[in-house]
Length: 147
Image (cartoon, rainbow, N blue to C red; front, side, top):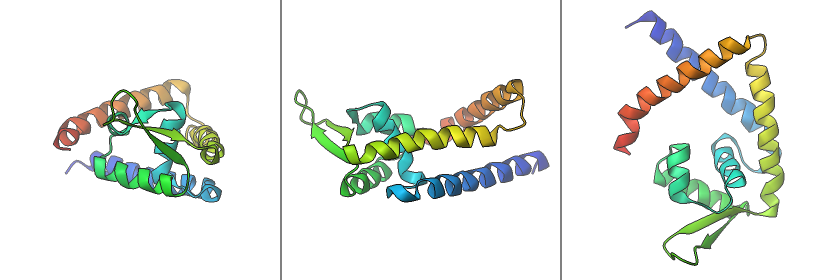
């Protein structure tokens, strides 16, 4: 095994775990955590989004999406409305209760990004983003088509 890959893998794993802890702590007053924040933000940015849109954007399987949407509905964060033109399509909207959480998520993103990139030059950040995007696409080609 290439030692550089194992260091990269370890760094990504640790970063992922730290991100989850950061978001869970920052969202502790909002009945949601790391796992749900993606969905709340997506619906905040795309009112009326369908489940299929979210599956494609967030890259999550339908079972996970269904489970998360159920939880968000149970805590009165989203409402689901049947499309008037196509009754098979369900559109999702945030409730008034969810708006403060969505705004907090945006604040957390900014704070996390500032902390994450502290002391790193703009060109290095851009290069890192480009490399990670390419890595994500590489893995996506191997994994996502199976889902």
